[in-house]
Length: 352
Image (tube, rainbow, N blue to C red; front, side, top):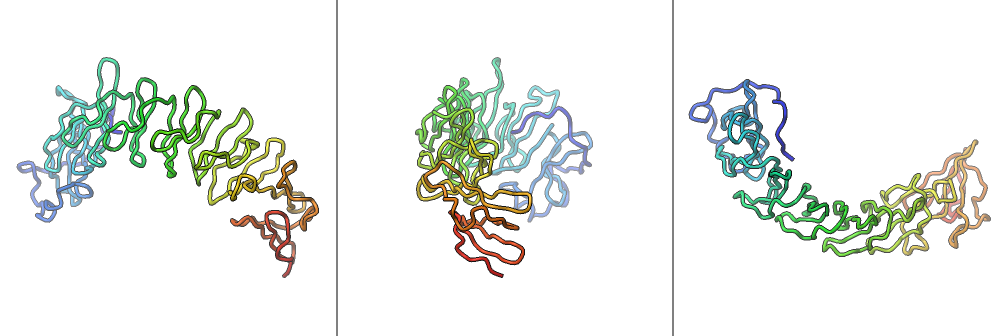
């Protein structure tokens, strides 16, 4: 978001202009001008004013701005100099240096998809809207804030409520949430209403109605929810609980590469959680426990899927235990290695 800086940047050396252009600008450089991106860059002279130069250093737009920003889609944000009637306000120029959208904004973002988020200030503070390349409003400045585009949607604040606008500046989800977070790769966003959290889809429909004390962003196909003051669980993309709400927050982390880790509320051992075909098989009950002279397996109790203590590796001590992505473990002692499945069975016997 572009705003008026309080201090000028480090001064650079200016280049003598002739008719607004610098001698020595090649025709090849001029032909590159349609968008300005990667060709024109802001430069500052010894008076602290900004203009634009080519990559070879030739100044093609004179130093006449208090601040200047990179080109995007053929337009660049420029701030009027102090002491003028428009001092500090921001407008947009084209690659020829012509002011195509007048200096009238107090805050701007670069154009993306033919639209730009801009702010204007009135008696009751700053308000934000969206303009097109002609500088006309496609979303009027009625929002307390509009965040940057994220996957085609931007969060917008209106009258202490939050909703979403799209890249065209159209309100696609009306501001009706107390808090709204950005959409994830799965097209799901966490929102809060009256202090309770849930999830919505891109149509603004509740995938999970407001019912949780907290809801984190989706990651790896799952969203972490706080069920009460002390316990957490995960919901999947259908909105259903994929784990029981029995996990403590001390080590509960989002899914990465198919695995998360957490503590059961009544069990201080760190247990891996892996997605399965159903909630019943979702929580792996086998955990690694470090002991004074090596490592052993620990087993969660009180669950119908918990492994029995008479498994192949119950109470057996290993020099190392390495978890694998498929749920199995490579175990080793001083001279032998083997493989254990997620229920504690030694499926590859110990051997050299």
